[in-house]
Length: 119
Picture 1 (cartoon, rainbow, N blue to C red):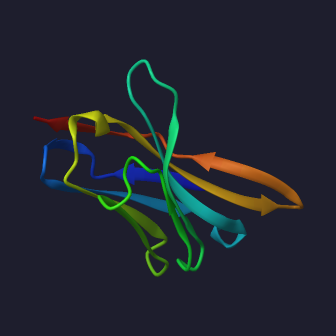
Picture 2 (cartoon, rainbow, N blue to C red):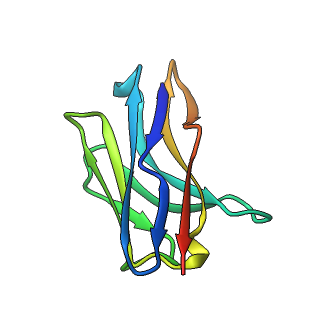
């Protein structure tokens, strides 16, 4: 499974930005996908996750009501819409995919995309 993020960049506080993650490879083995982020000097933290069929989503308290995770299975892509971002949302955003292959759990990561929120 390979993950490629796109759509990061500079966004003004209070604006909006959408980042994308396209997956290729053994996509049928994936159970869930989502986004982590890591700001300078801080640990990587879970931002949001979504199940394969999109029926269940989960958000960090810090982004609830502002960020929306979604997916388009026809494009093998998940999205994270950052609405009303704050300066503290500045971080590298990493896409991940969880699944099972030959009976073993795996987690695959993308290379990350930088999101910078200007105030």
